[in-house]
Image (tube, rainbow, N blue to C red; front, side):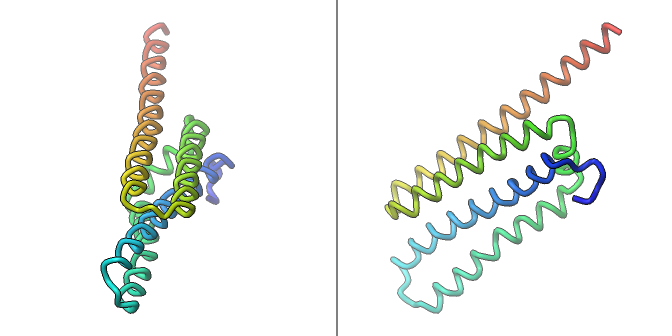
Length: 148
């Protein structure tokens, strides 16, 4: 974040990216624990599962940051950083809505599948839009170079 090419959009995009992973982890943990409470009655096992499931999103975030740092840095500091940030914000709003719906309903089986499908479809939509936009920009750049 201290690099000169990191703008406020870049910083917001990275933070929203991390928040998305955390929210998905929290939703998954809550659903898994609700199912686990119905199956296992031992509070110690449930506590251990809760602790493990709290660490998993952090491990995923660290794994992504270490292994895909260069790719993420290019995307979040590139010319499409504003669009990428807004698409990640869109996914974040969807995740917040899913989390709010889940916490108010607590109806596990149908809601569980609903959350998974909605999150998957919205993520595919946002990623697809971003990559189509990048492809379109590359084609326009190629046409512009051919004219010159």
